[in-house]
Image 1 (tube, each protein chain N blue to C red):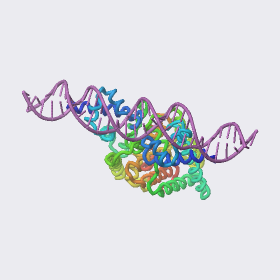
Image 2: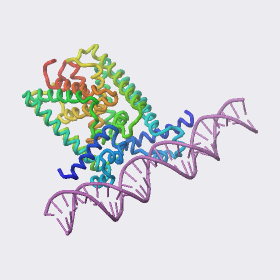
Image 3: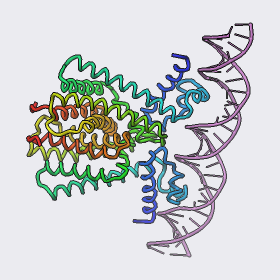
Image 4: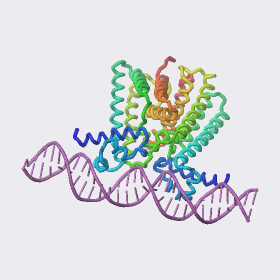
Length: 205
Length: 205
DNA sequence: TTGTCAACTGCACCGGCGGTGCGGTTCCGT
DNA sequence: ACGGAACCGCACCGCCGGTGCAGTTGACAA
Protein backbone atom coordinates (compact mmCIF):
# COMPACT_ATOMS: atom_id res chain seq x y z
CA UNK A 1 0.00 0.00 0.00
CA UNK A 2 1.47 3.34 -1.09
CA UNK A 3 1.39 6.32 1.24
CA UNK A 4 -1.22 7.94 -0.96
CA UNK A 5 -3.36 4.86 -0.79
CA UNK A 6 -3.22 4.87 2.99
CA UNK A 7 -4.36 8.47 3.22
CA UNK A 8 -7.11 7.76 0.73
CA UNK A 9 -8.28 4.88 2.88
CA UNK A 10 -8.21 7.01 6.02
CA UNK A 11 -10.49 9.50 4.29
CA UNK A 12 -12.78 6.69 3.14
CA UNK A 13 -12.91 5.24 6.65
CA UNK A 14 -13.90 8.58 8.15
CA UNK A 15 -16.35 9.24 5.34
CA UNK A 16 -18.01 5.85 5.66
CA UNK A 17 -18.53 6.27 9.39
CA UNK A 18 -19.97 9.76 9.01
CA UNK A 19 -22.15 8.90 6.01
CA UNK A 20 -23.89 5.91 7.58
CA UNK A 21 -24.40 7.96 10.73
CA UNK A 22 -25.76 11.12 9.16
CA UNK A 23 -26.21 10.63 5.46
CA UNK A 24 -24.09 11.84 2.60
CA UNK A 25 -25.45 15.36 2.39
CA UNK A 26 -24.97 16.00 6.09
CA UNK A 27 -21.36 14.85 5.93
CA UNK A 28 -19.23 17.87 5.11
CA UNK A 29 -15.79 17.67 3.59
CA UNK A 30 -14.47 20.09 6.21
CA UNK A 31 -15.55 17.62 8.87
CA UNK A 32 -13.60 14.81 7.22
CA UNK A 33 -10.57 17.10 7.06
CA UNK A 34 -10.84 17.70 10.80
CA UNK A 35 -11.15 13.98 11.59
CA UNK A 36 -8.35 12.83 9.30
CA UNK A 37 -6.13 15.84 9.91
CA UNK A 38 -5.69 16.31 6.19
CA UNK A 39 -5.90 19.63 4.35
CA UNK A 40 -8.58 20.60 1.88
CA UNK A 41 -6.05 20.56 -0.94
CA UNK A 42 -5.04 17.08 0.16
CA UNK A 43 -8.62 15.90 -0.05
CA UNK A 44 -9.14 17.23 -3.55
CA UNK A 45 -5.82 15.69 -4.55
CA UNK A 46 -7.36 12.27 -3.88
CA UNK A 47 -10.96 12.94 -4.98
CA UNK A 48 -11.99 15.25 -7.80
CA UNK A 49 -15.24 16.06 -6.02
CA UNK A 50 -17.68 14.74 -3.44
CA UNK A 51 -19.40 12.50 -5.98
CA UNK A 52 -16.14 10.66 -6.61
CA UNK A 53 -15.87 10.12 -2.88
CA UNK A 54 -19.32 8.54 -2.99
CA UNK A 55 -18.28 6.29 -5.84
CA UNK A 56 -15.19 5.10 -4.00
CA UNK A 57 -17.29 4.51 -0.89
CA UNK A 58 -19.79 2.38 -2.79
CA UNK A 59 -17.06 0.40 -4.56
CA UNK A 60 -15.41 -0.41 -1.25
CA UNK A 61 -18.78 -1.31 0.21
CA UNK A 62 -19.48 -3.83 -2.54
CA UNK A 63 -16.08 -5.44 -2.20
CA UNK A 64 -16.58 -5.86 1.54
CA UNK A 65 -20.11 -7.11 0.96
CA UNK A 66 -18.87 -9.79 -1.45
CA UNK A 67 -16.24 -10.86 1.04
CA UNK A 68 -18.79 -11.22 3.84
CA UNK A 69 -21.25 -13.28 1.79
CA UNK A 70 -18.47 -15.52 0.48
CA UNK A 71 -17.34 -16.18 4.04
CA UNK A 72 -20.87 -16.85 5.28
CA UNK A 73 -21.68 -19.28 2.47
CA UNK A 74 -18.32 -21.02 2.85
CA UNK A 75 -18.90 -21.51 6.57
CA UNK A 76 -22.32 -23.01 5.90
CA UNK A 77 -21.01 -25.29 3.13
CA UNK A 78 -18.42 -26.62 5.54
CA UNK A 79 -21.13 -27.70 7.93
CA UNK A 80 -23.84 -29.11 5.69
CA UNK A 81 -24.10 -30.56 2.19
CA UNK A 82 -27.63 -30.13 0.94
CA UNK A 83 -27.97 -26.81 -0.97
CA UNK A 84 -31.22 -25.94 0.79
CA UNK A 85 -29.64 -26.51 4.18
CA UNK A 86 -26.62 -24.47 3.16
CA UNK A 87 -28.85 -21.55 2.30
CA UNK A 88 -31.00 -21.87 5.43
CA UNK A 89 -27.87 -22.02 7.56
CA UNK A 90 -26.38 -19.02 5.79
CA UNK A 91 -29.51 -17.02 6.53
CA UNK A 92 -29.24 -18.11 10.16
CA UNK A 93 -25.62 -16.95 10.26
CA UNK A 94 -26.60 -13.69 8.64
CA UNK A 95 -29.37 -13.12 11.18
CA UNK A 96 -26.96 -13.86 14.02
CA UNK A 97 -24.37 -11.51 12.57
CA UNK A 98 -26.97 -8.72 12.29
CA UNK A 99 -28.20 -9.40 15.83
CA UNK A 100 -24.65 -9.07 17.11
CA UNK A 101 -24.33 -5.51 15.85
CA UNK A 102 -25.16 -3.59 19.04
CA UNK A 103 -26.55 -0.53 17.29
CA UNK A 104 -27.98 -2.45 14.37
CA UNK A 105 -26.96 -2.38 10.73
CA UNK A 106 -25.51 1.05 9.97
CA UNK A 107 -27.32 1.30 6.66
CA UNK A 108 -26.78 0.12 3.11
CA UNK A 109 -25.04 2.45 0.69
CA UNK A 110 -27.17 1.19 -2.20
CA UNK A 111 -30.35 2.35 -0.50
CA UNK A 112 -28.63 5.55 0.50
CA UNK A 113 -27.71 6.21 -3.12
CA UNK A 114 -31.23 5.40 -4.30
CA UNK A 115 -32.62 7.98 -1.94
CA UNK A 116 -29.88 10.24 -3.30
CA UNK A 117 -29.78 13.34 -1.25
CA UNK A 118 -27.68 14.82 -3.98
CA UNK A 119 -28.44 13.88 -7.57
CA UNK A 120 -25.58 11.57 -8.37
CA UNK A 121 -24.35 11.21 -11.90
CA UNK A 122 -24.88 8.24 -14.19
CA UNK A 123 -21.73 6.46 -13.07
CA UNK A 124 -23.01 6.16 -9.51
CA UNK A 125 -26.33 4.84 -10.78
CA UNK A 126 -24.50 2.29 -12.92
CA UNK A 127 -22.38 1.24 -9.96
CA UNK A 128 -25.51 0.77 -7.91
CA UNK A 129 -27.19 -1.23 -10.62
CA UNK A 130 -24.14 -3.44 -11.02
CA UNK A 131 -24.12 -4.11 -7.29
CA UNK A 132 -27.79 -5.04 -7.24
CA UNK A 133 -27.24 -7.36 -10.21
CA UNK A 134 -24.32 -8.93 -8.35
CA UNK A 135 -26.71 -9.80 -5.53
CA UNK A 136 -29.24 -11.13 -8.00
CA UNK A 137 -26.67 -13.39 -9.65
CA UNK A 138 -25.44 -14.69 -6.31
CA UNK A 139 -28.86 -15.57 -4.90
CA UNK A 140 -30.14 -16.72 -8.27
CA UNK A 141 -27.31 -19.27 -8.44
CA UNK A 142 -28.27 -20.46 -4.98
CA UNK A 143 -31.92 -20.74 -6.05
CA UNK A 144 -31.02 -22.80 -9.11
CA UNK A 145 -28.83 -25.08 -7.04
CA UNK A 146 -31.57 -25.66 -4.48
CA UNK A 147 -34.32 -26.09 -7.08
CA UNK A 148 -32.23 -28.79 -8.72
CA UNK A 149 -32.73 -31.15 -5.82
CA UNK A 150 -35.81 -29.62 -4.15
CA UNK A 151 -38.65 -28.87 -6.55
CA UNK A 152 -40.42 -25.72 -5.27
CA UNK A 153 -43.92 -26.25 -3.89
CA UNK A 154 -45.18 -23.50 -6.18
CA UNK A 155 -43.87 -21.86 -9.35
CA UNK A 156 -41.22 -19.29 -8.45
CA UNK A 157 -39.13 -17.18 -10.79
CA UNK A 158 -35.44 -17.43 -9.92
CA UNK A 159 -34.69 -13.74 -10.36
CA UNK A 160 -37.73 -12.75 -8.33
CA UNK A 161 -36.62 -15.12 -5.62
CA UNK A 162 -33.10 -13.65 -5.66
CA UNK A 163 -34.44 -10.10 -5.55
CA UNK A 164 -36.67 -11.09 -2.64
CA UNK A 165 -33.56 -11.82 -0.58
CA UNK A 166 -32.14 -8.39 -1.34
CA UNK A 167 -35.52 -6.73 -0.82
CA UNK A 168 -36.03 -8.18 2.65
CA UNK A 169 -32.49 -7.23 3.65
CA UNK A 170 -32.90 -3.68 2.37
CA UNK A 171 -36.42 -3.39 3.75
CA UNK A 172 -35.39 -4.93 7.05
CA UNK A 173 -32.69 -2.31 7.44
CA UNK A 174 -35.18 0.46 6.72
CA UNK A 175 -37.75 -0.94 9.15
CA UNK A 176 -35.11 -1.47 11.82
CA UNK A 177 -34.16 2.17 11.49
CA UNK A 178 -37.74 3.43 11.31
CA UNK A 179 -38.81 1.42 14.36
CA UNK A 180 -35.54 2.23 16.13
CA UNK A 181 -35.22 -1.46 16.96
CA UNK A 182 -32.06 -3.30 15.81
CA UNK A 183 -33.82 -6.64 16.43
CA UNK A 184 -36.19 -6.11 13.50
CA UNK A 185 -33.59 -6.84 10.80
CA UNK A 186 -32.45 -10.24 12.16
CA UNK A 187 -36.08 -11.21 12.76
CA UNK A 188 -36.91 -10.30 9.17
CA UNK A 189 -34.01 -12.42 7.96
CA UNK A 190 -35.47 -15.34 9.91
CA UNK A 191 -38.86 -14.64 8.32
CA UNK A 192 -37.12 -14.85 4.97
CA UNK A 193 -35.66 -18.16 6.12
CA UNK A 194 -39.17 -19.36 6.92
CA UNK A 195 -40.26 -18.34 3.43
CA UNK A 196 -37.41 -20.26 1.83
CA UNK A 197 -38.23 -23.26 3.98
CA UNK A 198 -41.92 -23.11 3.03
CA UNK A 199 -41.08 -22.68 -0.63
CA UNK A 200 -38.89 -25.77 -0.89
CA UNK A 201 -39.65 -28.11 1.96
CA UNK A 202 -42.46 -30.61 1.78
CA UNK A 203 -42.63 -31.07 5.55
CA UNK A 204 -44.44 -28.69 7.91
CA UNK A 205 -41.60 -28.33 10.41
CA UNK B 1 -59.49 25.83 3.25
CA UNK B 2 -58.04 29.20 4.24
CA UNK B 3 -55.82 31.12 1.83
CA UNK B 4 -52.82 30.34 3.99
CA UNK B 5 -53.59 26.66 3.92
CA UNK B 6 -53.77 26.70 0.13
CA UNK B 7 -50.36 28.32 -0.19
CA UNK B 8 -48.94 25.88 2.34
CA UNK B 9 -50.29 23.01 0.28
CA UNK B 10 -48.85 24.43 -2.90
CA UNK B 11 -45.44 24.51 -1.24
CA UNK B 12 -45.89 20.96 0.00
CA UNK B 13 -46.91 19.77 -3.47
CA UNK B 14 -43.84 21.29 -5.04
CA UNK B 15 -41.62 20.02 -2.23
CA UNK B 16 -42.96 16.48 -2.45
CA UNK B 17 -42.37 16.30 -6.16
CA UNK B 18 -38.84 17.64 -5.89
CA UNK B 19 -37.92 15.54 -2.84
CA UNK B 20 -38.94 12.19 -4.30
CA UNK B 21 -37.17 13.13 -7.52
CA UNK B 22 -33.90 14.36 -6.07
CA UNK B 23 -33.85 13.79 -2.32
CA UNK B 24 -34.38 16.24 0.48
CA UNK B 25 -30.87 17.65 0.60
CA UNK B 26 -30.80 18.34 -3.13
CA UNK B 27 -34.10 20.20 -2.96
CA UNK B 28 -33.35 23.84 -2.28
CA UNK B 29 -35.80 26.27 -0.78
CA UNK B 30 -34.98 28.80 -3.49
CA UNK B 31 -36.09 26.25 -6.05
CA UNK B 32 -39.45 25.81 -4.30
CA UNK B 33 -39.86 29.57 -4.25
CA UNK B 34 -39.29 29.69 -8.00
CA UNK B 35 -41.84 26.92 -8.67
CA UNK B 36 -44.53 28.24 -6.35
CA UNK B 37 -43.86 31.91 -7.06
CA UNK B 38 -43.77 32.66 -3.36
CA UNK B 39 -41.19 34.84 -1.63
CA UNK B 40 -38.58 33.58 0.80
CA UNK B 41 -40.27 35.42 3.63
CA UNK B 42 -43.51 33.79 2.65
CA UNK B 43 -41.95 30.37 2.88
CA UNK B 44 -40.55 30.98 6.33
CA UNK B 45 -43.91 32.37 7.39
CA UNK B 46 -45.39 28.88 6.85
CA UNK B 47 -42.41 26.76 7.91
CA UNK B 48 -39.95 27.66 10.66
CA UNK B 49 -37.18 25.80 8.86
CA UNK B 50 -36.54 23.04 6.35
CA UNK B 51 -36.98 20.34 8.97
CA UNK B 52 -40.53 21.48 9.65
CA UNK B 53 -41.19 21.21 5.93
CA UNK B 54 -39.97 17.61 6.12
CA UNK B 55 -42.29 16.91 9.04
CA UNK B 56 -45.30 18.30 7.21
CA UNK B 57 -44.34 16.28 4.14
CA UNK B 58 -44.16 13.05 6.14
CA UNK B 59 -47.45 13.72 7.93
CA UNK B 60 -49.21 14.27 4.64
CA UNK B 61 -47.58 11.16 3.23
CA UNK B 62 -48.90 8.98 6.06
CA UNK B 63 -52.42 10.35 5.74
CA UNK B 64 -52.42 9.56 2.01
CA UNK B 65 -50.89 6.14 2.68
CA UNK B 66 -53.65 5.27 5.15
CA UNK B 67 -56.29 6.37 2.67
CA UNK B 68 -54.82 4.20 -0.09
CA UNK B 69 -54.60 1.05 2.03
CA UNK B 70 -58.11 1.57 3.38
CA UNK B 71 -59.43 1.83 -0.16
CA UNK B 72 -57.48 -1.23 -1.34
CA UNK B 73 -58.64 -3.42 1.53
CA UNK B 74 -62.23 -2.20 1.17
CA UNK B 75 -62.23 -3.08 -2.53
CA UNK B 76 -60.94 -6.56 -1.75
CA UNK B 77 -63.47 -7.10 1.04
CA UNK B 78 -66.24 -6.20 -1.35
CA UNK B 79 -65.21 -8.98 -3.69
CA UNK B 80 -64.30 -11.87 -1.38
CA UNK B 81 -65.14 -12.95 2.16
CA UNK B 82 -62.37 -15.17 3.46
CA UNK B 83 -59.71 -13.09 5.27
CA UNK B 84 -56.87 -14.88 3.51
CA UNK B 85 -58.44 -14.25 0.13
CA UNK B 86 -59.02 -10.62 1.07
CA UNK B 87 -55.35 -10.19 1.85
CA UNK B 88 -54.14 -12.06 -1.24
CA UNK B 89 -56.45 -9.95 -3.39
CA UNK B 90 -55.27 -6.76 -1.71
CA UNK B 91 -51.67 -7.67 -2.50
CA UNK B 92 -52.70 -8.31 -6.09
CA UNK B 93 -54.37 -4.90 -6.27
CA UNK B 94 -51.29 -3.32 -4.74
CA UNK B 95 -49.01 -5.01 -7.26
CA UNK B 96 -51.26 -3.86 -10.10
CA UNK B 97 -51.31 -0.32 -8.74
CA UNK B 98 -47.51 -0.26 -8.52
CA UNK B 99 -47.17 -1.73 -12.01
CA UNK B 100 -49.41 1.04 -13.34
CA UNK B 101 -47.04 3.76 -12.20
CA UNK B 102 -45.12 4.39 -15.42
CA UNK B 103 -41.92 5.55 -13.77
CA UNK B 104 -42.26 3.28 -10.75
CA UNK B 105 -42.87 4.16 -7.12
CA UNK B 106 -41.37 7.58 -6.52
CA UNK B 107 -39.89 6.57 -3.17
CA UNK B 108 -41.08 6.22 0.40
CA UNK B 109 -40.55 9.16 2.71
CA UNK B 110 -39.97 6.83 5.67
CA UNK B 111 -36.96 5.27 4.00
CA UNK B 112 -35.84 8.69 2.88
CA UNK B 113 -35.94 9.92 6.48
CA UNK B 114 -34.11 6.83 7.72
CA UNK B 115 -31.31 7.54 5.30
CA UNK B 116 -31.57 11.11 6.53
CA UNK B 117 -29.39 13.25 4.40
CA UNK B 118 -29.72 15.87 7.04
CA UNK B 119 -29.79 14.74 10.64
CA UNK B 120 -33.43 15.24 11.50
CA UNK B 121 -34.49 16.01 15.02
CA UNK B 122 -36.27 13.67 17.41
CA UNK B 123 -39.74 14.71 16.30
CA UNK B 124 -39.13 13.46 12.77
CA UNK B 125 -37.78 10.18 14.12
CA UNK B 126 -40.88 9.83 16.32
CA UNK B 127 -43.12 10.57 13.36
CA UNK B 128 -41.35 7.91 11.35
CA UNK B 129 -41.61 5.39 14.15
CA UNK B 130 -45.31 6.08 14.58
CA UNK B 131 -45.85 5.54 10.87
CA UNK B 132 -44.00 2.22 10.89
CA UNK B 133 -46.01 1.12 13.92
CA UNK B 134 -49.19 2.11 12.09
CA UNK B 135 -48.23 -0.30 9.31
CA UNK B 136 -47.42 -2.99 11.84
CA UNK B 137 -50.81 -2.62 13.52
CA UNK B 138 -52.65 -2.74 10.22
CA UNK B 139 -50.94 -5.85 8.87
CA UNK B 140 -50.85 -7.50 12.30
CA UNK B 141 -54.63 -7.20 12.51
CA UNK B 142 -54.87 -8.81 9.09
CA UNK B 143 -52.56 -11.62 10.20
CA UNK B 144 -54.62 -12.31 13.33
CA UNK B 145 -57.79 -12.35 11.31
CA UNK B 146 -56.36 -14.81 8.79
CA UNK B 147 -54.75 -17.02 11.43
CA UNK B 148 -58.13 -17.32 13.13
CA UNK B 149 -59.51 -19.42 10.27
CA UNK B 150 -56.30 -20.62 8.60
CA UNK B 151 -53.77 -22.08 11.03
CA UNK B 152 -50.29 -21.23 9.66
CA UNK B 153 -48.28 -24.17 8.35
CA UNK B 154 -45.40 -23.11 10.58
CA UNK B 155 -45.08 -20.95 13.69
CA UNK B 156 -45.06 -17.27 12.68
CA UNK B 157 -44.95 -14.25 14.95
CA UNK B 158 -47.69 -11.78 14.03
CA UNK B 159 -45.54 -8.68 14.36
CA UNK B 160 -42.74 -10.24 12.34
CA UNK B 161 -45.26 -11.16 9.67
CA UNK B 162 -46.61 -7.62 9.65
CA UNK B 163 -43.12 -6.13 9.44
CA UNK B 164 -42.34 -8.52 6.58
CA UNK B 165 -45.03 -6.83 4.51
CA UNK B 166 -43.52 -3.41 5.16
CA UNK B 167 -40.00 -4.73 4.61
CA UNK B 168 -40.72 -6.19 1.21
CA UNK B 169 -42.50 -3.02 0.15
CA UNK B 170 -39.63 -0.82 1.32
CA UNK B 171 -37.01 -3.21 -0.02
CA UNK B 172 -38.88 -3.62 -3.28
CA UNK B 173 -38.85 0.13 -3.79
CA UNK B 174 -35.11 0.25 -3.12
CA UNK B 175 -34.38 -2.64 -5.47
CA UNK B 176 -36.63 -1.16 -8.16
CA UNK B 177 -34.65 2.04 -7.95
CA UNK B 178 -31.25 0.31 -7.76
CA UNK B 179 -32.02 -1.91 -10.74
CA UNK B 180 -33.70 0.96 -12.56
CA UNK B 181 -36.61 -1.38 -13.30
CA UNK B 182 -40.09 -0.32 -12.14
CA UNK B 183 -41.31 -3.91 -12.63
CA UNK B 184 -39.26 -5.17 -9.69
CA UNK B 185 -41.55 -3.72 -7.01
CA UNK B 186 -44.82 -5.27 -8.28
CA UNK B 187 -43.02 -8.59 -8.79
CA UNK B 188 -41.75 -8.47 -5.23
CA UNK B 189 -45.26 -7.80 -4.00
CA UNK B 190 -46.39 -10.92 -5.84
CA UNK B 191 -43.53 -12.85 -4.24
CA UNK B 192 -44.83 -11.63 -0.92
CA UNK B 193 -48.24 -12.89 -1.97
CA UNK B 194 -46.71 -16.28 -2.71
CA UNK B 195 -45.17 -16.27 0.75
CA UNK B 196 -48.52 -15.50 2.39
CA UNK B 197 -50.15 -18.22 0.35
CA UNK B 198 -47.48 -20.76 1.31
CA UNK B 199 -47.69 -19.75 4.96
CA UNK B 200 -51.43 -20.29 5.29
CA UNK B 201 -52.61 -22.56 2.51
CA UNK B 202 -52.45 -26.32 2.84
CA UNK B 203 -52.70 -26.91 -0.92
CA UNK B 204 -49.75 -26.66 -3.30
CA UNK B 205 -51.47 -24.48 -5.91
C1' DT C 1 -65.42 53.50 8.36
C1' DT C 2 -61.80 52.11 10.85
C1' DG C 3 -58.86 48.93 12.94
C1' DT C 4 -56.87 44.47 13.18
C1' DC C 5 -54.80 40.50 11.90
C1' DA C 6 -53.25 36.82 8.74
C1' DA C 7 -50.64 36.45 4.87
C1' DC C 8 -47.57 37.81 2.73
C1' DT C 9 -43.31 40.99 -0.16
C1' DG C 10 -38.57 43.04 -0.49
C1' DC C 11 -34.19 43.50 0.90
C1' DA C 12 -29.96 43.19 3.33
C1' DC C 13 -27.09 40.24 5.58
C1' DC C 14 -24.71 35.99 7.81
C1' DG C 15 -22.07 31.63 8.05
C1' DG C 16 -21.25 27.09 6.18
C1' DC C 17 -20.27 24.36 2.41
C1' DG C 18 -18.59 22.56 -2.12
C1' DG C 19 -15.26 23.73 -5.07
C1' DT C 20 -11.20 26.30 -7.71
C1' DG C 21 -6.62 28.07 -8.34
C1' DC C 22 -2.07 28.35 -7.43
C1' DG C 23 2.30 28.59 -5.34
C1' DG C 24 4.99 26.25 -2.18
C1' DT C 25 7.02 22.09 0.53
C1' DT C 26 8.44 17.37 1.87
C1' DC C 27 10.12 13.09 1.00
C1' DC C 28 11.07 8.94 -1.65
C1' DG C 29 12.97 6.45 -5.41
C1' DT C 30 16.16 6.64 -9.26
C1' DA D 1 20.92 15.75 -7.70
C1' DC D 2 16.32 15.56 -9.57
C1' DG D 3 11.61 14.62 -10.59
C1' DG D 4 7.30 13.50 -9.22
C1' DA D 5 3.83 11.92 -5.77
C1' DA D 6 1.70 13.62 -1.93
C1' DC D 7 0.58 16.88 0.17
C1' DC D 8 -0.02 22.23 2.83
C1' DG D 9 -1.79 27.19 3.02
C1' DC D 10 -4.46 30.55 1.56
C1' DA D 11 -7.47 33.42 -0.98
C1' DC D 12 -11.59 33.41 -3.29
C1' DC D 13 -16.34 32.12 -5.51
C1' DG D 14 -21.34 31.11 -5.58
C1' DC D 15 -25.15 28.61 -3.56
C1' DC D 16 -27.88 27.66 0.23
C1' DG D 17 -30.25 27.75 4.75
C1' DG D 18 -31.59 31.01 7.72
C1' DT D 19 -32.42 35.76 10.26
C1' DG D 20 -34.29 40.34 10.86
C1' DC D 21 -37.14 43.80 9.94
C1' DA D 22 -39.95 47.17 7.81
C1' DG D 23 -43.68 47.52 4.82
C1' DT D 24 -48.05 45.98 2.05
C1' DT D 25 -52.52 43.80 0.94
C1' DG D 26 -56.99 42.12 1.62
C1' DA D 27 -60.69 40.05 4.38
C1' DC D 28 -63.49 40.55 8.20
C1' DA D 29 -65.27 42.35 12.55
C1' DA D 30 -66.69 46.30 15.63
